[in-house]
Amino acid sequence: MIPQTRYAVTDDDVHIAYQTVGDGSVDIVFVHAFASHVELFWELPSFERFVRELSSTSRVILFDKRGVGLSDRLSSIPTLEARMDDLRAVLDATGSERPLIIGDGDGGALATLFAATYPERTLGLLLWGGTVRMAWATDYPWGMSEERFEERLRIRTELWGDAERAVETTRMTFLTIGDRLAKDPSFADWLVKIQRYAAAPGDMVAFSRVWFSTDARSALPAIQVPTVVLVREGWPAELIEESIWTANQIPGAQLERLHGEEDDPYLGDVTEVAGSARRFIASIQEERSVFDRVLATVLFTDIVGSTDRASASGDREWKDLVEQHHTRTRALLARFRGYEVDTAGDGFFATFDGPGRAVHCAQAIIRSVAPLGIQIRAGIHTGEVETINGKAGGIAVMIGARVGAIAGPSEILVSQTVRDLTAGSGIPFEDVGERELKGVPGVWRLSRVTDPIGT
Image 1 (cartoon, rainbow, N blue to C red):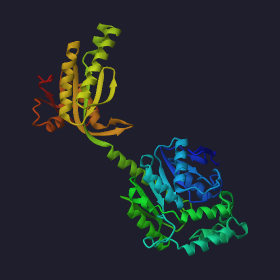
Image 2: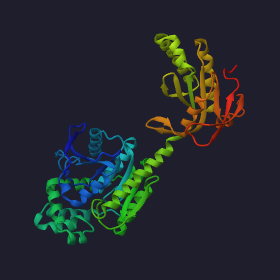
Image 3: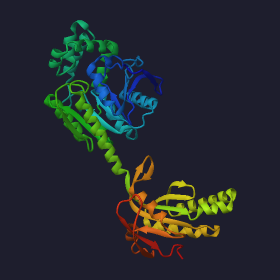
Image 4: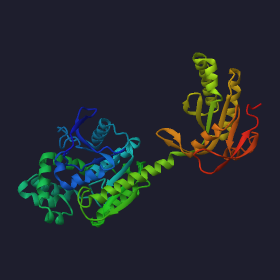
């Protein structure tokens, strides 16, 4: 079943046709080469398999760039910059914050420029081949000479969308197509149909001239997102060399070789291509999880005997008391450069970039709330803290919470790590032995701050 086609509107009021497939947690945007039609592409069985494979674990976003397919046809040929607006409009319309972008053919140049310009909107970049320029240059020997380009364009114009010369058109369009035509003669009929519906011959000529004059090489060193360049082992040597060169220009990019020789990712072994995309996403997520782990000190505090105190005080008085406690605690967190992560009832969870500041903050809180007639207890631990959905989490947070839970009135308990890292700070500690912490493996040596109010 063909997904519903919808329209995104760019800042300059151009309507861009798009579709979404699947509902995975990670978005994948596929940027077609020049000629596309989001509905007719589904008539190619291998394309449908390709998208279904990708959408098994992700949401796939397809679109026709301005001037082709079901998007608005224009009187002038759009620049690469204008086509970036098409992609951004589609991402906004679909609510896609940071997708993996797959660029095919000249769509790779668009994907490259977008990733370099909007790294905050790009999870990663997957380039099908490394073509970022079409024209030959002394420092780009894989390009096409102007004479060869003009001759090829003349022939393509004659053949474009010609059903009677479908096989000839297909051989002109693809480098490695012999086996496919032998196994699937209908492929040629599909191709010329796509050409007719995607763009008129004159549009094809104009787009081709723009692509021939485009050079996206300068964007390569500016790419900051994880990047993989995919090639097939059966491609001509010069195309593989070009892809290797492109990968080498992008900081940290990798080249991955796949089996086969088919020109496009939706031809040949689409399962292998989709599997590569899934592995790439998994590696990015693993990398990000490492980057999202930092060494931090966690502080947990709560009011001792809060239930009994609330019952004795009454709701209104207790609410006022808790509000004063919160105000004083927040002021001291700010003073000692603590970050309030969460507040639950009468308890606080905060992180610090140093264990000494966390201890001094706990001491100051104990001293500050004493005139209110309340006591708090505090637990402090330093360890690797993970960022989970924008909040701090992980085993270090659990340890800090458990340490705080066993502290007594006006007592600050810390893990051995905190004591070790504050050596020489002048903070007085007393060993309280090893304890088991609920839900945390092993036993943990704890210490007490012997001067909890810092006098």
